[in-house]
Length: 234
Length: 289
Image (cartoon, rainbow over all chains, first blue to last red; front, side, top):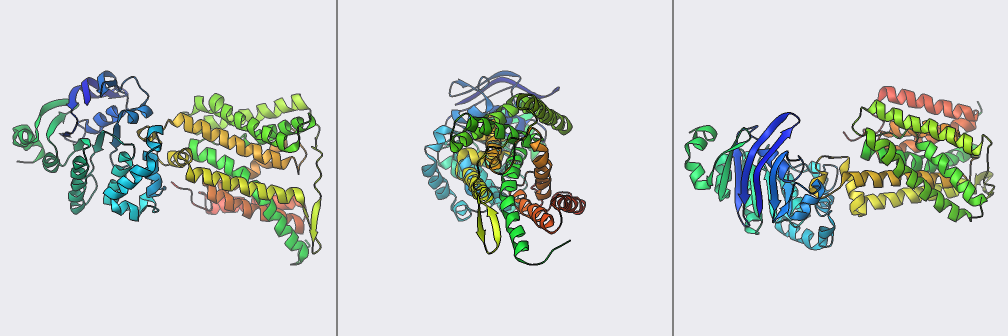
């Protein structure tokens, strides 16, 4: 589905990704783990077009992502739930969801998908008229995921969905991730919460200072010395 | 000073309300553009002037007033889009002072161009609508119509901003510019549409103003500072704040002008503005951060 080959990316003169190659197949949940500053968020930003790649190839279902304008990438079936949610705080929950359905193909199915998202997250329906910025962190994460689903994606990119949330809420957020997986979405998730995310994901890549250090199934990574030493304090 | 709570005082208050409709419309266009693009169109009132001349010549050329008005609105909407495309887009990432200077340059350019093209004479479109009289009070029809249409225009914009995808994107983009591509939104297109709407609102104001005011190249100086002051008072970029501020300022102008001389009305309004800005530099109605 998604394929990256030798992707480089830089912020000005600071190179953040070095020759990253990875694949995500339809129906998988793939995790990217690594320390702060390893380039996890950068990787998702490059895939969704927020940061242009400076080298390499990226394709989504055979469509090259490097040659299309950033605002057209969502039309290839990629929806990005950004770090710290990034809702429009002064817009209602429903207006936020409407923004998720902005692209022409999604507008035609707005009513149907709104019902679907409200069915998935009844809490959002209760709060449809509330300003998104006034909701709790967990509800905001729900709204951010709902907004992403409004575009009718095949692949959902989740950037640190548990960040800044209380431990009880973190468990709920990982439950949300399980639910969208069960709904048939392909998921690429970036997390610092390594133990939790490896329970959700099938496979994982370990990123270290912009390079992929290790890749494998979640069980393999959980057992690997690299991961145990560096990220679990074992 | 000659001020009593009599029928003339009430007449002044009501005339202030009627004036507020027009000022609110003017402030709305400026606030919309600033709120979305983060650039102040110092030359906003000059776009209104261009619209007034456009409507004047279209009407003189034989077009019925309503047709001339629509042509004027379209003309200024195109001018607004051009303003963005030619002047603002190249300086979008520049410091605010540079943006201010280029739109200031447009102000002087348009004034000078209008003086050369149309001369310095005061021109009147020559439509007299008369007035209504009630209880010893008199209200010009032009002012009543202006108020009604201005409020109608504001409501239409509100519906557009809350009901349509483009309108929602216009509200969203000022809250988080960077993630707009994730929504499939082309920010450049939103900016261009916003500029055209800002221009269209200036064109609508022009169509209303030709019914009340003579047209001359410097008419922008009569309204520009006033509109800018209203926007700052309401919190620059805050459309609701600007609406309320228009009603406050127009009361100072109308009541102050009625109790003393007209010039005093403006003087008191600006005095109030200065005091208000000392006390609340962010505007009376805190703009969203």
